[in-house]
Amino acid sequence: MKPTLSVCMIIKDEEKFLGRCLDSIYGIADEIIVVDTGSQDQSKEIALRYTDKVFDFEWVNDFSKARNYAASKATGEWIFAIDADEFVERNSLEKLKTKLKGKPPKENIFGVQIVSFVGLNGESTSLNFHERLYRNNGAISYYRSVHELLAHKDSKESNGILDFQLYHSGYLTDVINNKDKSERNLTLLLNKKEKDPIDYFFIGNEYRNKGDFNRAIKHYQKAYKLKPHINLDWVKKLLLYMADSLHRDKRDTEALEIIESCEEVYSNIADFKVFKGIILFNNKKLKQSKKVFENILLQKGNLVSDESIDFLELLPHRYLGEIYEKENELHKAVQSYSKALSLNEADDDLWSKLIYLLAKHSTMEELAIFLNNNVTNKKGITPQRVVKILLAVPILEVQRLSRSLLNESELSSLENEALLIKNLHLDNQVDDVMEILKEKSENGIVNILATGVYTIVDLILLAKETGSAKYQEMLLTMKVDKSLENLLNMLFNNKNKKLSSLEENFFISIYKQASVLDINEVVNTLKSRKVFLSKQAKHRINEINFNIS
Image (cartoon, rainbow, N blue to C red; front, side):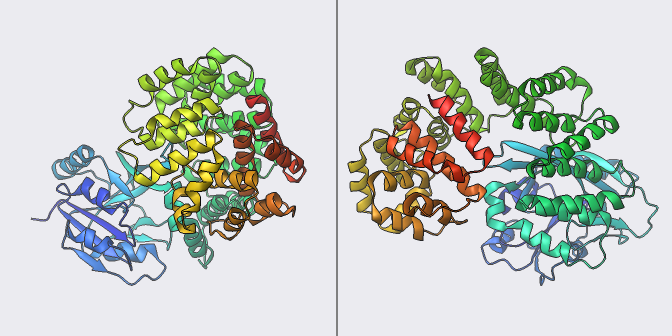
């Protein structure tokens, strides 16, 4: 008798998440087939702990060929395709297997909902459906070299959708940076000789991920022009992403035109309404933006979200918190931030915003009680997160609360050392900071910066404040993911060039922390360089002046 469920996966250098994925399916799947396409890490060794069906496949720039090779090794009645950076809820998989065994469905191919965690801590989610479960009858296979899809030899076959969720962490910030997925996918898509309409949508997505919004918009427009019909799932996402790209490309009139048209066609989808509120917010039209978000919350029972459940409540509450704060309706702001955090505790930026508001209107003793009762005891909020949440609040006394975590056992020795140096800097004990750092090699200092506690921003401030040629040179020669050369030359060598968006973000962070520490000489130097910033960056500087004053 054939086994019921074969789980198939293709891998390459997936040691970080592979064990978690295999743990979620092991003992439920009747067999696990792992196809390795050239790993240089411990991925194959990890896979062999769970299954003896581990095979090598020479990578030929085609995901479908690799997936179909994996399927050729499967003996189960059904094949479930999963990626190493995904995992399932075990009870749900058990129920699915029982259903397949007892009352198998009529359809042969099924889509499942992919829940992707986005950001540094998975503070946001993104939803989409993808075909992952199919009958192992020899008539079904994957096609397309990238963003692969399943097809039955009989094109008249109907597909189904399962009430089943697959969780995906591949879009977390550090994973994207490590794997450079956009560049890989873009190359495969551009090299595809005969492109379908959806290919131009996918190409647009990759350019959008890279920040090349002009190219993204052009490919979205081409995909929309060639679309088979308007109710396809990817067409709705295309319109949302095109509006977002237009907004990021400072073409808000066009973005709002698309959104308002979509509100008529897709009247029950919250996503377009949220994007409208965000565009109005970013254009300082706070009353109009507030009305949009308040209406979304009033109508939420009649709305659905296509992109993420965050659009139904979390994002409206988050933006309303900021609007109420700007309007000095502080009680409402606290309520909105608190409601947003009750929906997702993983958003450290939101915690910092709430703590900032509370700190402005309560004593440090009262704030410490709040932190002990509502933050430090939360499951999943580690000492590392608490430290970074506190250090992100632009109030000196709040940042100094981080010293209470010094010598915390869950912090590594390196993190504890970084926290000590940070607090010495917060106390203006610059000589002590210099004394500790002078004993470190350049690599030792880089390791301290990598903790995210004492950061590149702090080292830049130290170099600027003390005039240390040693640290200025170190910063100029230090290897980072993206160059800060223009910013560093502006700060240290009076060579003024246009800054990249990343450099502008660093400039703003340096300005904010210099203001917190009241280092007037540095603040004034940075103010004199504001002329070289974009309009948006200048506005953010003005907001810092307002909030810290």
